[in-house]
Each structure stands twice: as structure tokens, then as C-alpha cells.
Length: 181
Image (cartoon, rainbow, N blue to C red; front, side, top):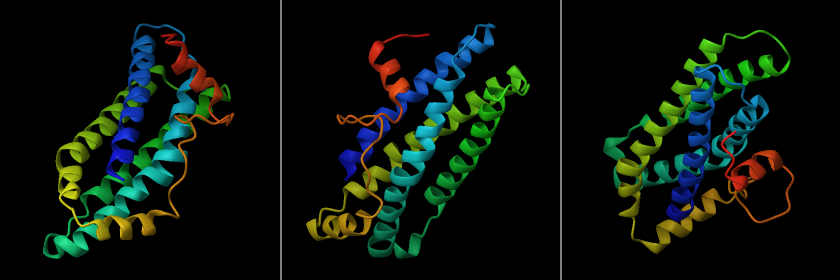
């Protein structure tokens, strides 16, 4: 389960790097593909927020209940909620832009930079603090129980998989092309 979450983080980092390129181009007045930016945020909403983060929340609740009930910490769940709200706001602005509604370029740049920074800080927190705690769960029975609890939230990654799913096809082609446009 931890390997899957770490793999998700690697994939999310790829997408955040693409967003960095996009906001850097916006800063110097270049045109960008707003559909591609929207696809990245949509991916984050459809996969990260509806499968990846819920899995982390389930594992965290299990860990806290069994190994650290006195140190109950809601930081992870609060961060997940904050990221969900952030991506909803960003998606709303992107949809306005794609509907030809004028949105401040400067505000979009600020929002994209903040979004990337928040996502990166969140992954650093999980990689440096949360995942090492969970890795101490060496009881195979714990991981079986967690797997069972997570089974309803486990979905295949709609972008980084080998099936013929056409969802995020443009984004997949962009990532595979090594194009920086």
C-alpha cells in the first residue's frame, strides 16, 4: 500500500512540474494550453482527491486508533480538505478562462504557484513524517485489515496506467512526448 502511495507521489510530482512550466510561461507572457492545465487539476480532483487521499486517511485513522490513540492528530485530514478546496477554486477559474470569461493572468499565476507549493509541501510532510510512521506497522494483519478497508476507495490511476482508457488522453500524450509547450 505504501509503495502505491509513493508511486502516486512520483506521478503527482510530474504533473506539478508541468504546472510550474505553465505558470513560468504565463509570467513571461507566453501562451499556454489551458485545457492541459485544467486536465491536470481535473486529474488531481478525480484521482488524488477521490482515491489517493481517502486511502491515506483510512491508513492514518487505522494507525492512530491502534498505535497512537492518545496522539490523535487531524493534520493530514485537514490538509486533504484544504487541497480539495484549493483545487475546486482553481478549477472554477480555469473553467471561466475556457469559457472566454476574463480572469486576471496575474491572479491565475498566483493561484497556480500557490497550488503547486501547497501540493509539494503536503507531499514532503507525508514522505518525511506520515509514511515513516506507517512503515513501522510491521504486522501483516494490519496491512490486510487496511487493504480490506481501502478496497472500496482503490481505483486504477486513470492517467498513469497501461490500459486504453481515453480519459486524460491529451495529458498522457503531452507527458509521453517530452514536449515543454
